[in-house]
Length: 401
Image (cartoon, rainbow, N blue to C red; front, side, top):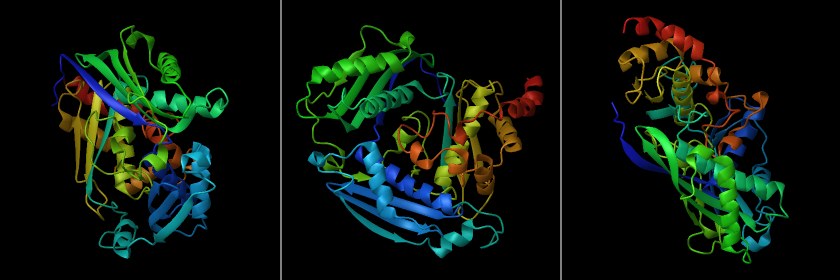
């Protein structure tokens, strides 16, 4: 079991929707959304690269959908806010190259029900996936990553909804929040770092004032204090940014996408992958399981690990760590509870979370691709609709304690 430190500081970072890697994630997921909307059985593994005045879309896509790949990419870039030719990356002017082919038939037969050695739909790859939840916030997320997301998300909202007032802000940004913990509970924010792309004439003091206002809005007052240390554009200048300042690639922000370094990570990226890929779908399901366990009051913190083999439906293992906060001490028993409540086969995950039909249920993969895949309402893996089932399934074990 993991230990709880008496006192420590933990730091997590986030990046805005205009960060070059996040531009790529959003394009890849917008491609996925477009394919699934017309053909829910699409197999998509889309990778995007961005650099100065260039977008490259590549990968393996098998679909009946008719998709204008270039238009999708330009629309995403435009919505993010890259419309000014002066930053050397603009939705209407950049070049778009498309290099797409179909999924390997060797993989397809292993993940299609009725094909391959096994008749059930198998996992799209081998590997292990993790999900995490903590009751330290109402979103059941760790404080540092949640606050880091909220800072850059609010700055983006202000930039887009009040463009005249905040005309000095450009789309690329990063944040970082350090939180002090005592006996596993957050007690105060120690440091906030924000680097935000800006127009040449902006003064750093203007941005610093805005960042402090945003922090006061998105971070609970009980964790704030007069001695919070702020580092705002610590180099003094951030004019060159976005894909012109740094080449972007899909899948390079996996810690930003998950829990900010809290808990474990299986190593697989999410964006651009259809739900037959357990890198994505099983990570979502693991979050769903962990969140419902914490919401049910069975633990203050919970990490769930599942492991799969390509072409095999049932998970090879389920591991649970409640960080010594669980009501049921024997995690093997909690594993039995999980298996009794949740279907962790690839088909079961897809059906439970309805991962093939995002548009029908008014969410999108593209929206998950910036500001974290976890901790925001509207995604099916964030529901806590298994609380009563978990309480009922665990009741007999609690009585025996």
